Image (cartoon, one colour):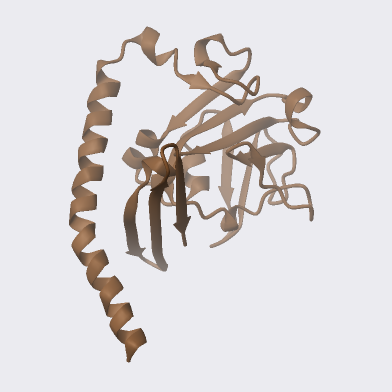
Length: 213
């Protein structure tokens, strides 16, 4: 009985908090859109990236063929998975074999076990030791929490190791302090159903925690 009461209590909290949270996120998205529209070409070329030299530098000064997919790009495209978001990058080949198997690479030679592309989330590699590649179906980040995706087309083994023969993909998520509150995502379609829940809160003056599933 107590468990049922607690469960319905959580449901009520979610229902009450969702409208306010949705309004805040929509307002933030609109503000971001207006900010991007006001930027000049010079400002857009000065967006900081970190995947080329492992420290922040303007994208225009980066000594690599690098492209940035912003969180706004992902939201406007209406994609629901990371592989679909990578289709927004120039020169990245994204192929889907079935409902859960993806093949992603750059510079050709695309197969389901492609292992010549380093993929990282916040600078940490997500490859599997099974074939030194990536199982894309288990990279189930909530796309709302992705700040940007940096894609380098071309060799990057000097900095990132032997797998970076064809390129580097670095998925950079938002800081936990930027994702406070509760977020619930529900989607559906033909032979498709998705549900995601995320909760974040601030810890101290400059810390934060985020859990999702």
